[in-house]
Image (cartoon, rainbow over all chains, first blue to last red; front, side, top):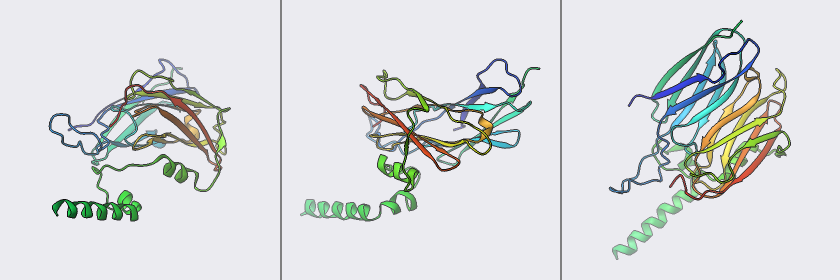
Length: 110
Length: 156
């Protein structure tokens, strides 16, 4: 299954030097390995989003290590200081080593 | 007789598990294996022999005290700490205290973040505390917690 995720900048307008908030939503199960299917009784294996790395113009600005106590379809917000126009690249890796990448343009006004 | 041998076998397995917790947790465990991670282990790993300072004065937490559903508990933390090149928060970790797996997220920051802030959704199986740990680049550790009353558990 393809990994689906969304990355966006929450602030509508911002200038160079402002701190904006970036939001990451990943559509992904966070199965702990303890829950069972109610009908068949089969245990759902441990399957979760493992690592998220955000890179802004070539430099790593945020690295997240997740574990199964994060909710299903994790939502994360983190701050970012705008230093100039560019792109924010976010890489996702899950526990099965499946990878995905999302980018969002950073376009400061003025 | 069969029952007896079954009990013996399960005892033997349990003993191996007790003797080799590290082996089971890090070495042999496949990704799909269920692993319990107790809160104290995570805390001791994080502290690594140091003492945590009370961070309740510099951290402002925004966590609902009684969320509708334990499956999605929004945790928001802002740390009032400088983020300059030589003095900044380098890691924020969110833990729970009574889930089977207590690690929610570990966030590595750099001064490029501007402020120390994190929002994340956590799931909680029962009424317990959310513990926020923050580490500075100089190795200082701050700790703050809040109890959350959960009526409907979010994980099995």
